[in-house]
Length: 102
Image (cartoon, rainbow, N blue to C red; front, side, top):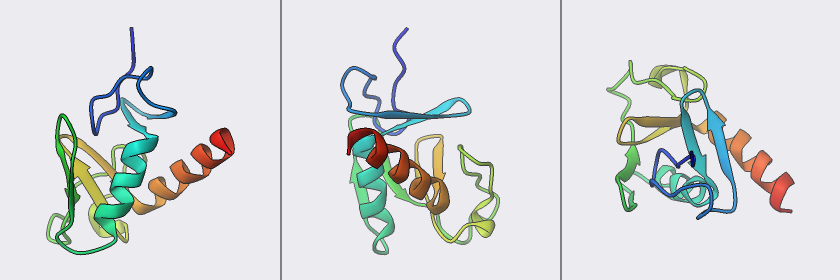
């Protein structure tokens, strides 16, 4: 069974790196897309399966799919469909990708 990115739907053979969380995955391409979305208010990034967008401060109870922190506990958070990632988990994903690809 192929694993797929929870943000764009691409499978592990279509991406350079797929990082796993508990029942959620993010690929190297979506890591870059999330950085773009979090860099400015009202930015979004479209993928084949969803639109990545910021989770607003008002959505305090939204939870990061990777670490479980709620929106009000994180500096920033992005979502695509049911998948969520906070800025701290995004930074950890950057480190994993840079070690593996660099």
